[in-house]
Length: 166
Image (cartoon, rainbow, N blue to C red; front, side):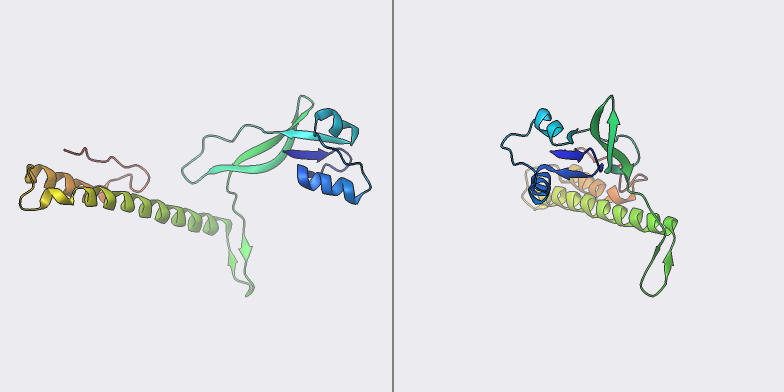
């Protein structure tokens, strides 16, 4: 649970708040209730709704707290956000370059995961290609080729249509 100190607006977790109270001569308590927090000059921070929508590159990112109808809630934004950066040698990377690098990394991770799934599906069907397998080898060979062709699909690596297993 997060707690917001009314006088400063600082937000911290319950254990941090207890340590803060102890370090500042505040009382100790066993039960954390809205009433106890109010008496200590603090508010409970309720969990706000996660951010939704966006693209495959975005997730719900913590964005602080906000007050709604007199209660405090965690705020979630679609992120990540990208900024211009500069390394120790003074080399500048623009926000657009940082975003492109991030997307390329995410694409590579997703492609790796899809290839791993494809590898599992191929391995699970290896037995169909042995000489004495009691299956229609041509049908299974077509399925296995369709698995190999997954990386050529137009939506790869984010939109995959897996072939149906015979």
